Length: 213
Picture 1 (tube, rainbow, N blue to C red):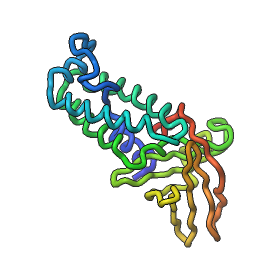
Picture 2: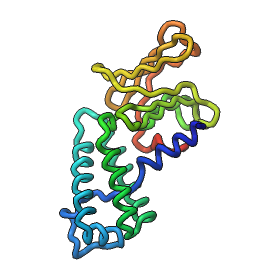
Picture 3: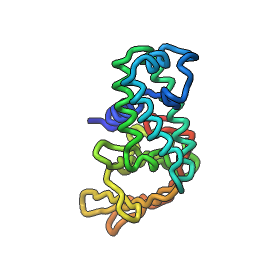
């Protein structure tokens, strides 16, 4: 499957729609659109909303995560817009979107999600996209700026070890190690790796790893 297609599918699976507040935290008498009215009218949706809001709060309050909360708040606002546009008052659509959002917010490594840049991206340099994968792993894609099409340098996925390292093993015995810290990923090359990809990438909370920006 082409990388662009896989990335688009990942985005669609994870970016669905949900509100910032629980059904119990906004006044249903003042529900302002079809989606809010549907949430207030359906006990099942209300429970999903409450579960989603609890996970969202936990993620936003993640300690020692740098600008993660800024990125997630932006992601959540975008998600609400998509929810309102795509589902409106359709309860079944909303329930499916909540299921995806709850799964997304419950990912054990979600706080490392983001677009990390090196140099003057998008003008030049490189960028590293980190996205959550089903099964509790992180997917990483390293590209040359500014245009990702045909300019991939590294692709892989894995869990993080106890020292927050993700190891990517390539053909020929090359092993690359990515060390995750708050808002920073440091890439190290193992013996025999070519081309050299070592460098330090800083998370940009204004950009999404799900989009070709």
